[in-house]
Length: 257
Image 1 (cartoon, rainbow, N blue to C red):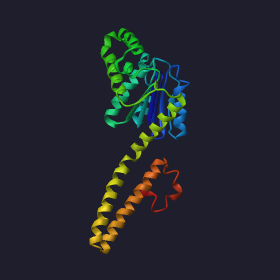
Image 2 (image 1 turned 135 degrees about the vertical axis):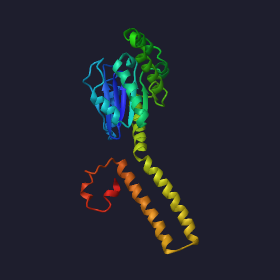
Image 3 (image 1 turned 90 degrees about the vertical axis):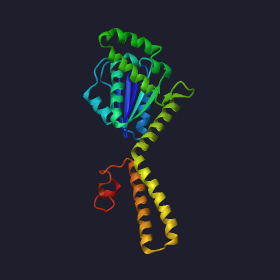
Image 4 (image 1 turned 180 degrees about the vertical axis):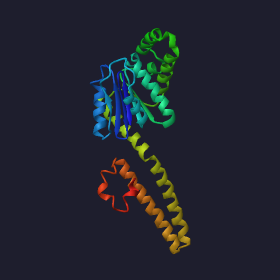
């Protein structure tokens, strides 16, 4: 699952799922909306919550979305730091990531990454107000600062680079897809690589000791590699058990999942 956050729009994406949070922001109906559409065209499911007003606490639905996410896309805009809720979400994302190791992909839209990382510019102005409002609980404000600094240090996308918004949206969407693909097939890729190395060693060894048992052993390794590659393709296509239910009586069905 992934998430995108913007001043007041944040989106989560997972495999084929996405989750988004929203607040009023000039880019809500432009950049973030276009990115959402691009992700959906790539068959990445998304979740967007457009029903919360600024200042609302994080709902249980959003907490669940964060917990289930595989990847977070956080879109930082000029006004992002004015929202307590958005800042709370960043803290929650980092807390969740400690256990689940989800991917974080920051996107800096019309804001300098350095300003986000060190709370300068419009972020400094927002934190002056936060420090006044939460003077009795400054530890919360410090958590927000630390969270912004940590997230902004992740490798991400700076939208100030000279390119059209359409190009940028497509490039980010493809980056998200590639990262999700690695999440979903990384374990299989590791197994396939190891077994291919084994098959090569078997082939070299069995040339000098050509027995029926050795041939069977090598063929079994090759068969296992073939099955893992098919399983990898199934994952890449996001095919579910329900979609392949017509095969459930075959011996190969269980090996696909």
